[in-house]
Image (tube, rainbow, N blue to C red):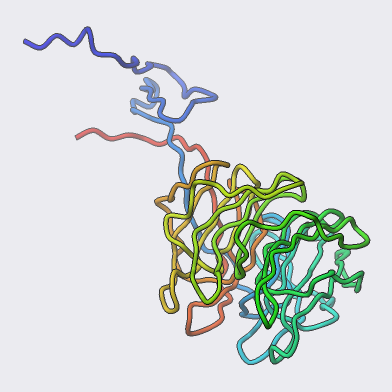
Length: 331
């Protein structure tokens, strides 16, 4: 007969009511409901309200329940339209951007946002324009020092960052910092110059993911920013990807979607903890790229708009990651 007394483990709690603060992996038997229960961390994407204007390469800011998108491309045209989200539906604002552009990057909140960089109609010029949003109108403010598009950007309306990207003639490595009035070029440049890159965080603590290096190599490189310099992480995305959507902080971010090669759209959700990447079992329902970055946290975020290689989309998906009590079954 096998003796079990030496096996290491934990006893299953027998309780009359569920614990108030269970930890992940904890299991208990509830004598009132006669159910075996456990605590599990659940990650999921769920359908949200559709954008009023389907578009890709749009800017974004805010939280999952109070977010803003602006600019972008409908395919035939670049737009100035601004929409706000209340956690259920999108409303088109009468306030529009002063200049139509695609590949615009956003920072800030739903009522205090910044929109910068991008391409002007017809890809005629790369934009250095910066616009500030006060909840109802956009105002032109001081332009960037280096016009670019396909760059990473994050932060708040009064303290934002733009890193790497490209001009029409080639990529740039420069990092610029916004102080609420003007842009200053940092002496620190990214280690891997690239474009179609994405990022998350604040002006003093950020991270960038993936992108593309000349002459078109898609990379999975990750770099962290400490307010002074960029450091390349030994960790890389499990699938090198371009035009990802990201949100969160330097040490707790989500990087979702993108594409690994033209025509190979991704639905994958990458989770970053500041040093390593893991792949969530939850994938986007629609594989796509170039949606609005910068909306939400690792616990609750948003993927709005984007493209699937055929059409520009109005689709919104809501991300959630939280500990959940579940009833366990035995067979």
